[in-house]
Image 1 (cartoon, rainbow, N blue to C red):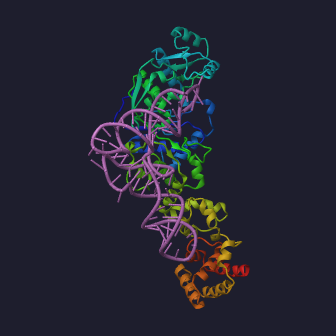
Image 2 (spheres, rainbow, N blue to C red):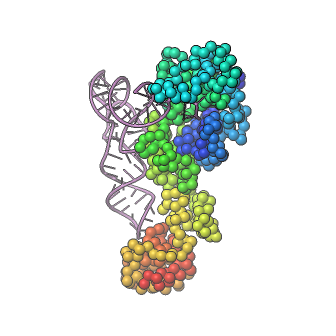
Length: 480
RNA sequence: GCUCCCAUCGUCUAGGGGUUAGGACACGAGCUUUUCAAGCUUGUAACACGGGUUCGAUUCCCGUUGGGAGUACCA
């Protein structure tokens, strides 16, 4: 056996490859990552693909990609060997089988020959647990039947009475009576292990020091601990995280909204925001600050401050947080994220500099990255129509005359910066003896086609003199 | 059903034997403003209930209720 270096922290994220990364999974992975990183430890990714019937093509790759997108990088795992591999359970079958045999030989497990039908029957008859029908088959007989090819599973022998107590890092002391624990299947007929065998064997072999996982695993933890005891292995620390919840308080699931981190990414959420948000579901550093980078979270995180109650995944707050993180980024940093969106709209030929200006004017007005594309087409295309409501409200009979006058003034304007346009407009308004608003609103409508948006004068500067003048003329024709 | 877990504003949460129970999102009002946002100020809003323990419980204990998870040859 390998020397167990008790001091070094090794955590893992052990998802089953279902095809996408669940946001709850992201949170679990994140906590395990943060905890490892802040302790100079190692964060491991292990793929739990022991259910052949649920195989999904390309799922592992998608999982890894989503994790890496979020910045939760693993130190050991598929493609990153750390001398504890392989990190994909379907490649470790022989290991589990050997351990199952050891359990069998030492009398801590037994072969069960019950058919699925029989099990089904006893269940419909009301049995909550396996009736231990095969538990007393003599070892030799069982071996013989198995060797003869009779299909069987290996089941864990749960002690007849007593209870199992353990300490959970977030929940404190928890105990279960053995009488309420099932003789869990450890090795299936197909030779694959169940989660319960695989997780214990791997966590031990991979020298995991802290098992950080969702609360749904709390009820099966006693089985795992029993396994550690049967094998004579020392226990890792357990930390069961509160669940992420739907608005109706049930376990967060598809069907009640987006659940895959890929979905949020595709919708234009920043990874910084998603990570920050998800980190605060079930944990917080205690102060009043809420905006943290991954690095800052690494510094602040602590298992002691993880809460016990489930947390509703609240999109409204995520939206706000996304906006905040967007404001934290420079316009140039946002460019690579926004540019493809603009390109999709057919605006790819505009310069980076131009796009950066647009981003600067728009970023406080959008919630997610994807909003950029729809929020301000007028920076890239001529307005084809004019917002009806804005038109009735702001385009009065006298507006044409006013705008015409403004057009004349702007034509003579050499410097077309925001302040220059503003002074030109205000002095025109003064000359006309009207309030600036009488010019501002029609001008906005004329050059953008809509009645809301960024600072009019900055918008004019970014669009440039030529386009502004042309749009005024066109609008004059169309709106008069 | 059984087992386990949980319980502060609608939501995320801070706090903790004596507090005006704090912050954030959302919502309302106001300010700012050329609009929309953003920002600022401000308002509404919570300790599930019942027993203890205590001089004093929202806080500690017990119970009730409520919610959740687990209960597969799935993870």
